Image (tube, rainbow, N blue to C red):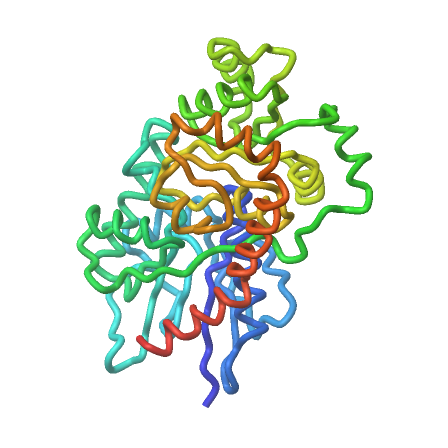
Length: 355
């Protein structure tokens, strides 16, 4: 008998990183499917689940927005049972019988911002995520998070017991410096030498301060559209002149790879319980990593970069730009091998087999 794992394809109207992750994981599940197993898709109306190797695509009558509202209320007519895995919280979380009908539903949380930093998100998104986690507490057979630090924190937020599992994410498949990287960097109007800073809110100030003291030009990524003026003002307030602060956002894979590959270092300042997509990509490209100490950064970077308290960021960046550069490049590249969508997919299959 063929075992079918059905993946919720959630690519329309969601964060670009989550859309990329959903597609890459689904492709990994197809590649690693055990003998006698196939992968199918459940997709909202208007979503093109054009992933090679899918056994079947069930397109539901509701568009993504309406489907999210229906599933939030526990209305999942027409979905059916079986093994269901969602790379996000969008899932038909309803009562089912795992013991007798072999029905399983698992969901994924890539960040805990709706609980730890709700002010950074639209109120509707915060309310939806919190409501879906409550449904997951009642009906999910497992909730997947990408790091052990997040698993520990989620256990404090929700009564999930041993249903919390850790399966990491990875860089996009084939993510590498493109052949036309120099041209792409010129199109982005990047300086010849620069560092990349990722973060959130006031944490960017730590990165700007370190860049100022290292006399480096800084490029900020992962910013909300329209946030550039406030960030430039923040940079100026801690000593980094406006002319040395550059803002980049909403980059495609090629432009992002060109940006990260050309950087002298990546400085990660956020301490949020969230999967650090840019950090993973930078390690994949061999860019030296300097990060503010946090549970997620310790989990992800391990010995693949410099993880330091925020008040030691200046010295760590100076080392990364000087004598420590080559050492950090090698350590980061070695650590990057720990993350792949193939490995993540194999762990999802193992999770469902265990359940």
